Image (cartoon, rainbow, N blue to C red; front, side):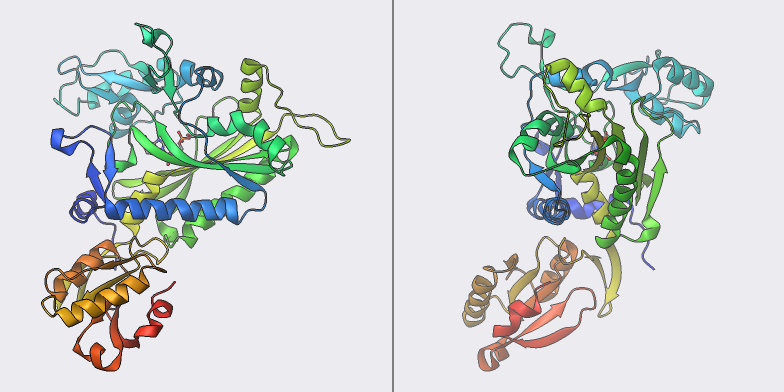
Length: 456
Ligand code: GAP
C-alpha cells in the first residue's frame, strides 16, 4: 500500500527531475525562495489553470482579476498589515538565531499561534521555556518574544534618502488587490451581489523562519477568491464554499484520508468563521487552504481610509456594505501536496521504479515520443514526424537519449501518462507501441489514432 513519502524523497526527485531548484543556487541559495524548473513550471501552470477553470469558467458569478503587486502604501495601512501583520519572534541570545515563538512552543508540546498578543505568547513561552531550545545551537537562552512585521518593503517610486520611513510594500496577500478593485469590477462587469472576484498572483512575506521546503516561502503565489454577499447570506454562502473547496481537492485525486478540516482557535475580531483545509504533508497535517467569513471588515476599512464609497444597492433595495467569504490557497502548497500525494514506488518487470501518478490534467508532459534506437535515422525521422504532429494538440516531448528503459524511468519520474515508441515494425505497419504509465501495459496503435489514445 502507498505510504506518504519523506520530504527528502520528494525534494530529491523534485531537484533531480527539474521540478524545483533552490533560488540563486550558484551563490549558495537564498533562504525561503525557490525556482520552478521546466517540469515544475508546467505543473504549477496546470495547478493554476485547474483552479482558474473551477472558479472563473465554471462559476457563473465569478470573474477574474490580475491586479498589480505594488499598490499605494495606504492599502496596507487600511488592511491592518502595517500595524498588525506580524509573527512572534524568539531570538536566541547565544547565537542570534531567530525562530517563530509559536512553532517552538508547539514543538515543546504547548499551543500558541500568530493571532495571540505578545503578552499571551510570552506567558506561554515562559511556561514551556525549560523544554524549548534553540534549533541552531541547542541552548535555552532566549530574549523576550517580540512581534516581527512580515510585510516586505521596497523603495519603488520613492527616491528619498531614507525611504524606509515611507516605504512601498510588496503585497502580503493578493486579496487586497481584489478589495480595492471591487468597485471597478462592479461598475464594468455584469455582476450583481452575490458575486466573486478570483485572482492568482505572487505574494511576499518576510517569514522569520521559512522552513519545510516550499511549504513556507518568502515569495509565493496565492489563488484567492472573494465572494461579495448580502450580510444575512454570509454564513450560508460560507458553508457552500466549504463544501465546494473540499470537493475540489477530492476531484483533483487527493485521497479523503489525507485531507481534514481544522477550525481556527483564535478568530480575528471581525471574522465570523475560519476553517483550514489541512493536507497530510510529509511532516504531518498542515494548512493547505483557508476558507474565511470576513464580515464587512475589508470594504469598511478601505472606505474609511480612501474615502471611496464601496457600498452596494440594488434598484429599489437598501444600501449595505457587502460581506466577504474568502477562499485562499497557495500554488506552492498545492504543488507540494500533489507531489506528495502522487509520489509512489512499485516494481515493474522485476525492477523497482519511482513513479509520479499524476492525474492526466496535472501531468507536466502528457506523452513522450521515442525512436526505439537513436542511431537508426529512419526511426528517429519517423518519431520526429509523429512528435511534430502530436505537439500541435498535446503537451508532449521527444526523447532519444539513453536506452529505452532509462527513458521510461525518466518519464515515470516526471509522471508522463503515455510513452509512444517507434520501432522497425512502425515503418511497415504504421503502428506504434503506447505504454501506459501506471500499469506498464503496452498496446499497438495506428499512427492516426495516437491523439485520441493519449488524450484525457
Ligand atoms: N487572504 C488570506 C490569507 O492570505 P493566509 O492564511 O495568510 O490567508 C492563505 O494565507 C494561503 O496562502 C495559505 O493557506 C497557504 O496556502 C498560502 N500561504 C500563506 N503563507 C505562505 C507562505 N509563506 N509560503 C507558501 N504559501 C503560503
